[in-house]
Length: 300
Ligand code: NAI
Image (cartoon, rainbow, N blue to C red):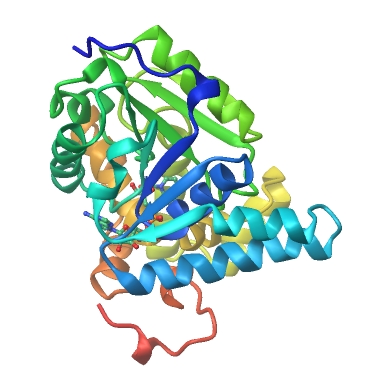
């Protein structure tokens, strides 16, 4: 159990974001735009370069729309320091982890974060489905570990789903809620069960769309058009899966399947095959749909 009080939200001045992929880059942008100093950490230097380019272009779009001054844009970019070593996070008040969706890898990172960061720091995970209680149990401060689940892309999507682990303190919950609101998000709160709220409901729908494609019910275009026009979704489930990342969808379904023990969550073989083939969705140029690169350029 953590013994030291975590900082009040007004004191959350320095934030560490680990993983500079689709989610981490957007989360770093939000924290910097809210005035925090941000350390953005990734083990892959190319991911950090891509993140800086994506943050600059995302903030640049706000400038060109007149929603942000050039000076505020420049200040936000300057507040983000890209680093490859988590040791840099010694002084941060809040860490938001957004690395690969693997419990073993995340747990190893939480062990390290617990050792490195100051005792009062809050450790949050952007996991789509993994148990916060289990991640927290890898640390000596389970009361200060919490789920902070953003949606893709974080600067645009208004929601943050906050997940309390079994030992998360009320104080940490309310600090993370206030911080989420400070960066412009609406908060919903979930207990710590596989997939939380949104993915518990969304992923079976995406999986069912794969089954419909796999069993020849319809073409991918008709499945997506059906769900867009028939249920008023802004995007069809197969296209949404491509945007999320097929590897992320598969990982979440496996967590639902293992955690809830019902075969209805068993991933469709077509989804598994796409991931095995390296068809991970929009981020790799090819998933259910092609995004301007040939399949031969996509490596498993
Ligand atoms: P991504 O594949 O775009 O980025 C992950 C990044 O983490 C990569 O740049 C990789 O180099 C880095 N990384 C991996 N292990 C690392 C380590 N040990 N230390 C430092 N960096 C490391 O993945 P994405 O889509 O950004 O997802 C990240 C997390 O966010 C996952 O847990 C995922 O489930 C969750 N998430 C994803 C959403 C989505 O729509 N893609 C939505 C909400 C949550």
